[in-house]
Image (spheres, rainbow, N blue to C red):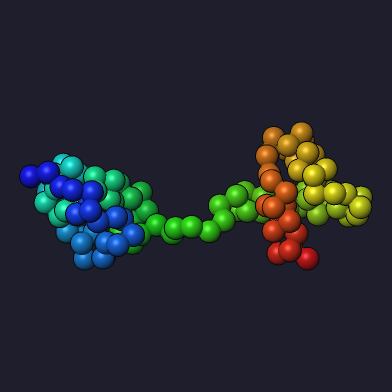
Length: 119
């Protein structure tokens, strides 16, 4: 039976109970696509089995929000030292230096968000 796009449930809308049933079906030997058809969810949602093996959690992954700032946090010491040495640096210059020195491309908005958090 083919599903219409409007009949497929996205990952965000799935309850933990549904996730457990999908994981149980795939661990019992069924394919993820077969489980998706049975439970009327998308094939990517049925891939929760992989997420369970990797993270041990059947809960939905965090959605939205800022992803790049976690990467800039690892460079906090370098950024603070850079600004301490030259307090008048512009955000564009800081981004350029990060790119040149650390092989890390950051947008002005990411650097600004970082500055707001640490100051």
